Length: 530
Image (spheres, rainbow, N blue to C red):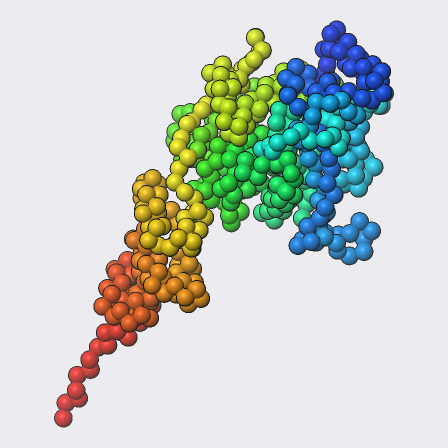
C-alpha cells in the first residue's frame, strides 16, 4: 500500500461474520475438530471459507536459524549475537490425516518471534475475550511436521509488511499455496538493530537480505525445486520483493499485495535504494492494490507508473474493490467485528469475498508463471477475476511482453566464461532489443576490462572489452578515455590518440585526455633565436 501520513493511511477494515449458515459452519468445524481428537485433514480450516482444497495437505515446519554475518542485540542484553531467523515453511504433504494445527499455534509463534507476551493488536482489540479464546482453538489448514509429498515443488518466498510483521498475518494464503503444490517460506519482519522497522534504505535492505536467506534455507530442502522460484510481498514486503526481483534474474514470478511500488512513494523508497534498477525488472509480475490507488489510464499515459515503464515480462495490474489495507491479509478471514484504532474503522462489509478472490487469483498467477498452467489465469483475466456472481470484480489490466534479452549479470557471466567472441553478438542483439540502450553498465565493463588486463592474464580480450564499452556507450567521454589509456598501455599510439581526441570532442575540458595527447603528441618547441 502507499505508506502515507496517518490522515492518508487507510489500513484494514474487517467485517463481521454473517449470521445463519456461516455461524453454523464455524461451530460445526469446531465440533468436528474436537470430535476427532485434534486430528483432521488440512484444508478443513474454517478460515479458508470457499477457497478450493488442493491435491495436497499443507505441511508446516519452523526452522530456527541465524545469520552469523549480521549481528543483533542478544535477548539477554549481553551484547550482540548472530541475527536470528525463524523460517516458517509450508509445503505439499501427503493427504494422510494428521494433527492439524490450531490458530493458537500461529499466535504463539508470533509471540515468540518478537519475544513478547502481548497479543498482536488486531487480535487483542478486535475480539472480546471469549471470542478470541474460541478463535484460538479453531483448526488451521496445515499439519505440523507432516511427511512431504513425493516430488520437488516450486518455491515462493514471502515478504511481510509493516504493522503486519508476523507470518500470522498471511497464514491462509501460505496454507492454500502449499495445498496446491508450492513450498512457501517466510520469516517475521524485524528491524536492523531492534524490533522497530523504519522506512529507510537500511531496513528495506535488511528485509531483502532476510528474504534472500529464507530463499537459501528453503532451497536446500529436498522437496524444493530451486529452478522455480517466485516471490510474494505484502505492504513493505512488496518493496523488498521488488528489489529482490531486480537483483535475482532467476526469480520467475513476483506478486505484490497493496505495496507502495506502483507510483513514487512519499519516502522515495524503494527507488532510493542503490540497487533499484528498473531495467533489471523482467520477471512476471502481478500487482494487486486498492482500486483508488491506481490512476486513470489517461493520467498514466502522461506520467507512466511502474506498470507502464516495465518493458519486459508479462505484467498484471489488479484493481481490488476495497479501501482497506488488511483485506489483502489473513485478518480478512478471521471475522473480526470491532474497530481497531490504528488499523481499521468499524467494518462496513464482509471482507472475505474480496480476500478469497485475491487468493484465487494468486493461485492462478503462480500456476501460470511457475507451473506452465496459464489457462486458469487467462480465464480469470477474461472474467475479471470474479468467480462469485453479483460480486464486485477484480478488474485486471494485462500487458503481455517478451521475456526480454539476457540480463546484465548473464551477459557479464557470458563474457567471463565464454569470452568476447561468443558474447559480442549476444550483447549486440540485447542492445537492439533495448532500442539501443546499453545492456551493460559502463562501469561494469570498465572494471571487467581492468581485470582482464591486469589480474586475469587475458590482455587480448581486455582490449576488446574496452572497445565494446566505447561502442555501446558512444557518448561517454570516460569510455573513450579508458580505451585510449589501454591502447597507450599496449603501445598502440595511433589508436590511443584517436580515442583521446574523441573523448575531448565529447568533453573539451577533459584533462585526462589532454594529458594523454601531450604524452603521445608532444608539441615541438621552436629553437631559441640567436
